[in-house]
Image 1 (cartoon, helix red, strand yellow):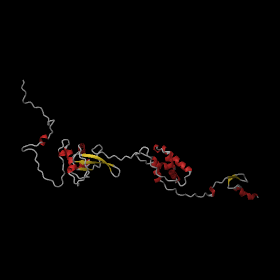
Image 2 (tube, one colour):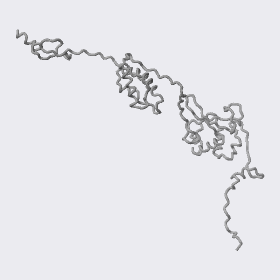
Image 3 (tube, one colour):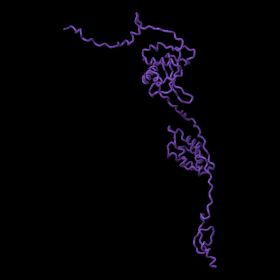
Image 4 (cartoon, helix red, strand yellow):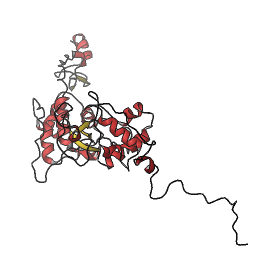
Length: 321
């Protein structure tokens, strides 16, 4: 009864022990006929020196190690974004992005932000073949040992937000320091005949812009500066509705930081030409409106430049004599 069944199936053992990696046995040198044998030849051209800390890294995946070796073998300035690498290797963009994040976490890739001459901020990635070394970035032809060399690599366009490369952020406008004087408003055109009534009409037009858009709430100083420019438009036979439409239409989508500056710019750059001269045609005598007078003969009212007799009385006056 105490004898165990010798034909029972033994328990299934785990494939790998907890403290032994799968390739521990193959990675250790062995005596005998088995194991790895190297057939090396010395390279004289087209070779890249790779440290064993990368080739035998215990935490990096094989894809990450392969990408690091491939990136370090490329010349400076080559574009190696995720789409380019996905087109070069059979692995997809998701696996390549994950491998690039591994290299960044272990110091083989790092990102730096730079401002290009146009004012745009771009992200550039530096490939480091020796993590922890932060010496100057050198070109491939400089006489610097390859184990001390860092290679600058361009990642110009990110593939997707949230991947290895984040999209470049647009440059934000600089905020004005508190208490700093503001820049003067641009100059505006002046009317040829600044009549008080014309300037008052221009001031009323500017004061009413806030009813169409609350952002055009102008100060008294800005209104006094812009009023001559609006008067110049009104003087050129432009209706107030047309002036209001030209000043408040097609606003930028990001909003206005200083509405008065936009109005001054539009008043100056979009000034219409002077209205053509239209001479007044003389009024024919039949269309003139003479005052009313009573006829001296029949006392009937008729229009005449001077008092006297009407047409009927003048026609019958010779017969009466």
